[in-house]
Image (cartoon, rainbow, N blue to C red; front, side, top):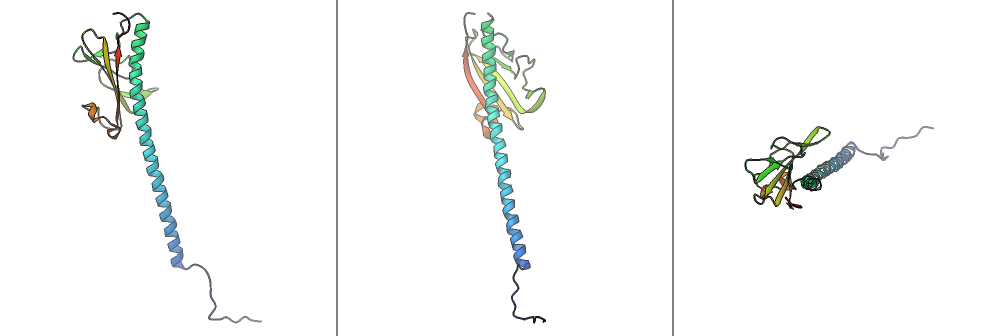
Length: 172
């Protein structure tokens, strides 16, 4: 027996417009999620750079403190061999390693592979007797140079610094 086809029969399913709308909504949702993940990753990397910059500036202070302490432990003058003379006797600069032979900063590196961080350590003595020294360790990352003033040094300008005062140990 043959079935009769009815003109009033309802066929269910998605229309072409509904399918296009569903694909559009899903695509838009995926784009928003990917955009949020991308910006989150970028902010995370920026925060990591800030933390590394601050830690490298603190390490610069510890480097000078270690040199001072080793000099004292080896019966040498407290501030002996921790700087390379700059233009005057009161201000000197050293780099990220104590064996540096010039006054210009270099990229901080591990295993000889340069990266985006640069550190400059400055030693300012209080007087000719050099009883105290103010140590400033400045780290920059990304493009740009060292700021002319520490007032311009902030994580927004991709710069971090640490400052401390060290005193002479023992006799002269």
